[in-house]
Length: 179
View 1: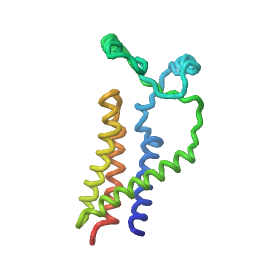
View 2: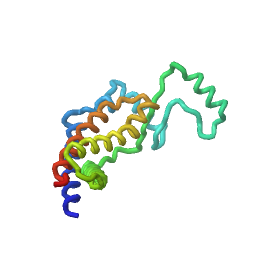
View 3: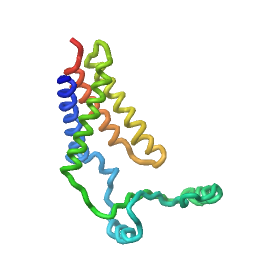
View 4: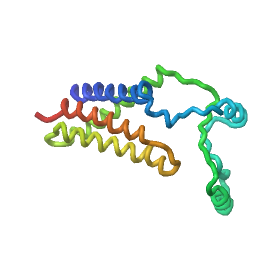
């Protein structure tokens, strides 16, 4: 049991370090959180008009008829639209968020170790390919699927997938390979 725990701790650290570099030092995700010079004006306009939640503008109220939905869809063709995530207060606990993120990275690699342990004669190459496939499954069913519907940029997420799961796969292949 010691080997999967060590593999998970080191693999989780690999993911965690890459995520820190990707979001912080390299700022690969800037396009997903861009600045607008109109932010103060937008902020003042919305801050007292929304309650905490996520909004899609424009849409119909819950329970709207099919005719109302169709009319809105027709009227929106070629028009601007937006998504808003509104929070009542800034309450970000960096230490808690980092801790939770690191724990999730460790658990994710532990699950990947379980999958890799089922491969007879595991090699470094097989571990890398398998790790990349697991990462791509997460990317395809998460960020990329959302980008199909909401036209978002997921290239930073794809880069993250290849780098972090490629590096984790190298580590796991080296450490877990069958002798």
